Image (cartoon, rainbow, N blue to C red; front, side, top):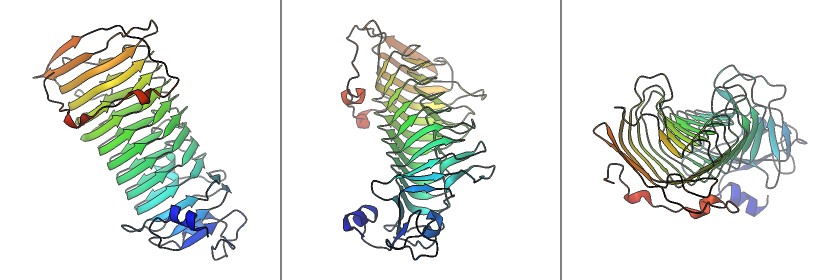
Length: 388
């Protein structure tokens, strides 16, 4: 095997390497010269530190890793360098449950790199790649398309990274979001692209905590681009920054507590939200709960342009469920090259609201380069409870 490729997929330099390719046979030993045909068959022999490299082609099978890696010795599933490896549901019916065509359930210390997962379904909770009750998982440079539920879903897990992935046309069944992170502690979603999906783009919800979402582009979603929703569980310590959110049918970035879960210590900064059909950024009262408790919400140094409604809106400034809300330097460039509201600085203290507006004229930005290039902020010194 090429030493450079081995180093790329097995950083520790340990473990066996197995191969799968459409022209192989499942009775083969899984060497480079005598590969196995099915990915699931090649993976059945994997132990901590091992790698399976998958050759170009379409695999009509469901992949369910049978074993976990160990600390410092993950099991790696990797598409061969430069190869298009497609996992297709055609001919396979998934269970009518929260599940995935590539399902990581109850597993730890896995790396999945470079796969394209398509046509997961037919049921409303069938995802392309689903991580459930697992830990120390890395999903890297994968893509999904035409999935009934999430392209990528992560539930009740710990220390999960989603990086450089692409999700298209997810949510045709109408339940979960395009990239869903639910009930998960210690997560990162970075440098991903979400396009043309029928639900929210990226959703962080239902008890998730200690996570970051940054460097992503979300466009063409039928609803909110990036959504942070406590649902009915405490959801906290989430940072959303340096994302490009545009041309979505709803609001660009929204925060909510739909069923009364406490949403706290959320930082929304240095994002660009433009040409969305509703708001640029919103703190909302979505959901049926009579209360929507939020504390320690910071919205700072974001740029919005050409959204149908004003830059920023809180659905109820005077309501008792909001406390310690800091909003600063939300910039909205309009078609007339003026800033509608350059700084709406708001702080809610003792269940009351104080707000100040300072409209300023300024040239509209040009987006020939990424708007993210113009942003830099250090929130390490920002306290949501500081005075304005």
